[in-house]
Image (cartoon, rainbow over all chains, first blue to last red; front, side, top):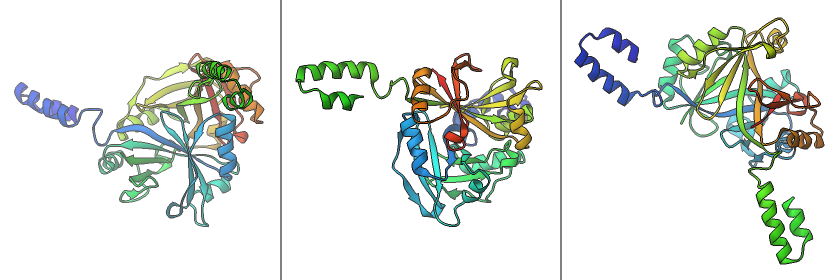
Length: 166
Length: 166
């Protein structure tokens, strides 16, 4: 955005005026399409209690109580790491979206990462303009009650990537 | 540790003395075997430039310059997420440890997570006491110049897990 403005304007005064506007409204840390923090790394597990025991006992982590989310087909536990969370996902119900993953990955495994954005629509638009496919046409309300969208793993170096509005 | 001491001591003075010692040396946030922050999530990629373009252009992330690490068989780039990093790994040399992963995962994918610990030896001892296998007998110096050890993914819910001393 900023580069385009600078290239196309020749008047110094106009350039400075637009530059100030640009910095105020779209500073790099607040651009609505720019990714922010890693909200969580999701791990699919066959046995939630076994996974909880591993993180709590063998690694000494703080672990939340299990929470059933029938509308998302998972039971979830958060492993609190201070700067972010590991989200443990166990299938709940016969149509759980992670059952297929566990058929291929018998021991469980890294399922997806979730990155925060200021504005989900701007972030989708930016990703799409670079040829990244979104798995839904519109954002949906995710497991944390916030608008989310998943990006196609084949367009993201094999990584299923969730964008979540802060 | 703390609970055991409190149960076994009946003298108030001795209890307080030991309690102070315990808090100073083994507070829950500083216990040498307890995991801390997520240092990074590693993503194996076939084409580092393509992966850098995706994170920088399509997602608007800040991305480091590539760094060749011949002793670890990788070229590495860090995607800075504010609270943690994504570490992009491209094979370097014929014996790169991530080449086999990329043979199975043609598009690339989530390779491992790295968790920080205060003391690598204490963390290894704790993990081993719960039956978690370490991939080396002793810690080694990792890509960031710090002592690290990898835990067997089959003991960690299918997740290759690196522990790194802070």
